[in-house]
Length: 275
Image (cartoon, rainbow, N blue to C red; front, side, top):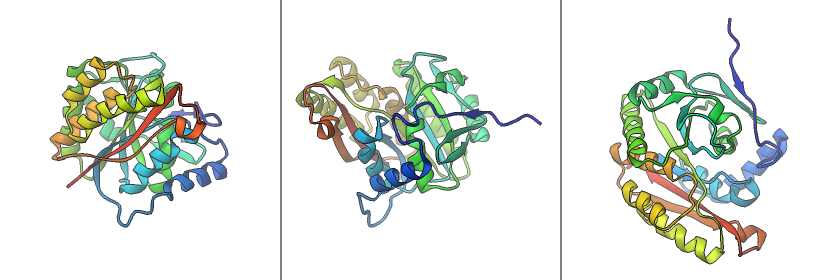
């Protein structure tokens, strides 16, 4: 019998605490900052992936507001440049200090069949942090969590749109709900004022579910939003599934925490309700 392949944490102890109890308590503190009257169902969301010290409260605001189903699809940028431009993992589990999260092989296999651009490639995920930092939030809210990770190293709109359409098609055939998470920070390493201006330009088309306008805004305004590819795929899928709009639930920059307003990173928390 073949042992289940385990992807071990790459950034535990750096982006978030490596001790289970400390991590659990920190995640809980971010999740309880917003006392939602009723959690909403969502097709998708955008959540940041920086160190928890800087963006944990924004990610927490997103995940605290929505129902987390048993299955989440997490799309992230490929920061390392390693591996295939559309890299999926379809077997095994990811380890965090809170335990192992299994990959849903059936759903991943269906995605690969629906989108021929996807390639099995664990190397793209080995040292990539952008999926990993989302998992403790999801584990804390959904004890039966399964997921599928996809790392995107392409900026070609047609490829991202094709992936988004394929995701919607597979979700329609899936027995059960699936949450599409686009893991992304916003503009990087410019002044706080410039970053807020650029981020607003990118956020507006996301609230309208306009993937093409988002793409054009990022390219034409030189907005260094690392996960605009995941956002485009998520928005495309959500719109095809019937979404009508999105909501900005939280926004911040690293300067809000560090006090440094000269070089900041922006963080947006966006939810695409299923209604």
